[in-house]
Image (cartoon, rainbow, N blue to C red; front, side):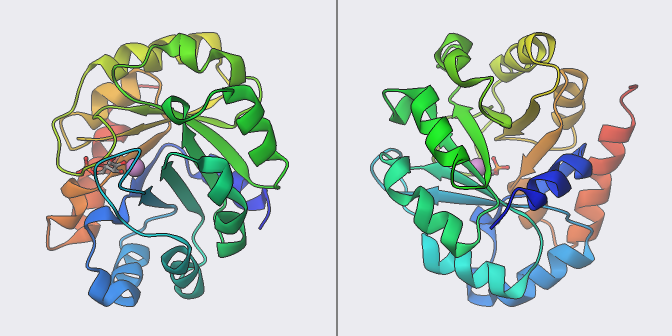
Length: 229
Ligand SMILES: O=C(CO)[C@H](O)[C@H](O)COP(=O)(O)O
Ligand SMILES: [Co+2]
C-alpha cells in the first residue's frame, strides 16, 4: 500500500486499462498472465455492490487474489453505496488507486480527503447524467477524475459522447489532474477521448471479447498514438 504505484499509473499515461469485469474468473491467474504479456500496465477492477448499481461483482478476496498473482498497479472502481466502509479493507487488499462515485456520497471533499489519508491514490467518478459541478469541491484533493461514458453498472454498453465535453472542460480547468474514461471504449471511441484530453482508457469488451489480447490492446494503443499531441 503506497502512492508509489500511483506514480506508475501516472507514468503509464496515455494507456489502456483492461477492466477485468468480463475476464474469465475461472482462470484468473491465466488471464493476468495474458494481460501482462499483452503489455497491460495497470489493471482496472470493478467493485459493484448490487445496491448503488444493479449488478454485483466481487470484493476484497478477489482484489487480494489478483495482488498475489500480479504486481501491476490496481485501479479499483468502487460502485458501492458506502465507499468509506470498504476503503480501508480495499487498501489492505492491495488497491493502489481507489475511485468512488460522487452520486454515492454527501460530502465529496470529505470522502476524498479520508481516502487520501489512507496512503493510496484517490479518484472521483461521475455518471453521464451527473454535472461536473458535483465533483468540483474535491478536484484539488483527488488525483484522478473518472468520467463515465456509460451509466456505471454493466460492461458492453454504448459510449455516451457527453463524456467528451466533460473531459475537455476538466482538462482546461485542472490540467494536472489525471483523466480517465470508462464505458464503451473501443477503436473508434478512444481517439476522440484522447483528443478531449483523456489519459487513462478503461476497456472491457474491446479486449475480453477478442481472442488475442495483445492485438486488441495494440489496436487501441495505435488509435491513441494517432492523435496529435
Ligand atoms: O465500470 C464499468 C462498468 O460500470 C466497466 O469498467 C466498463 O463497463 C468496462 O466495460 P466496457 O468496455 O465493455 O464498457
Ligand atoms: Co469501471
